[in-house]
Length: 146
Image (cartoon, rainbow, N blue to C red; front, side, top):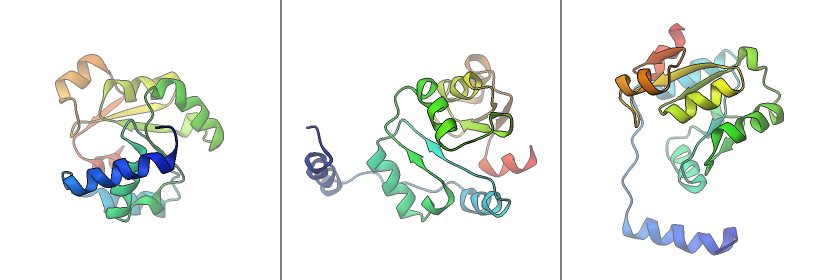
């Protein structure tokens, strides 16, 4: 399989066999609305399948908050400099939020502030030990307090 048209039947068949219904964490929509209201530019750089990521954003009507969505990214450290350049982000004013050490490594690699979110793959202790982010938060609304 090499093209988008060839992958579409695969993903449609995944839909037919049923996928877990994604859930929206408490406070996410409100936080994104507040950040957008403050003219904060946001983007997503994720290792999740691009197709799945777009589907979840559509399900919850969240895509409108993001300048760009980059899914299926396997090496965020390698990709993030390009994303910052393409979107003309000032790294001195950039915050990278993630739930894995690799996310924090990506942010640190460009000199951005890093925030680890504990609701994902890593527990707080593991994030502190392996990632050493600038900040650790337990819910997205806490980003508004930093």
